[in-house]
Image (cartoon, rainbow, N blue to C red; front, side, top):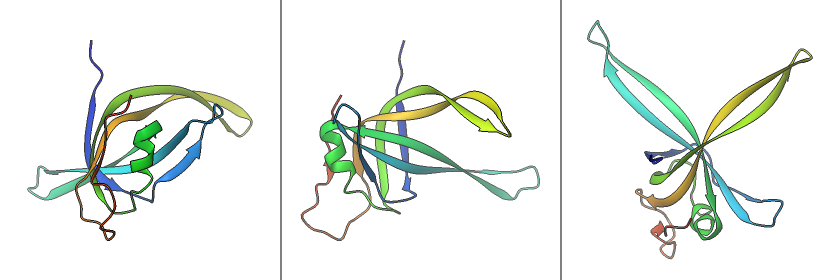
Length: 123
């Protein structure tokens, strides 16, 4: 049995640093990936998928330096969480997928020369 996710995509917004109830620091990243294909008419079509990524502990220190538009590659594990939403006084339960990163690397250049180039494996 194996659970591994590899993504290459761009940040849709700056990294969002948070603190969990147990005082552990983590960062939430919104990563966009895109696929393209030719349809039956020979025209290209695109689909963008958005991925919610969590970076914990030491990896969060690097992840919080990431900015909107930067290209990154990351590895992680896929986790599911059940949530409840209410629509017109009716409660709906559904599962959402999240990626918990184990490594992140920045692929695009950055402005600041002293920023680290990548995040170390941390899980």
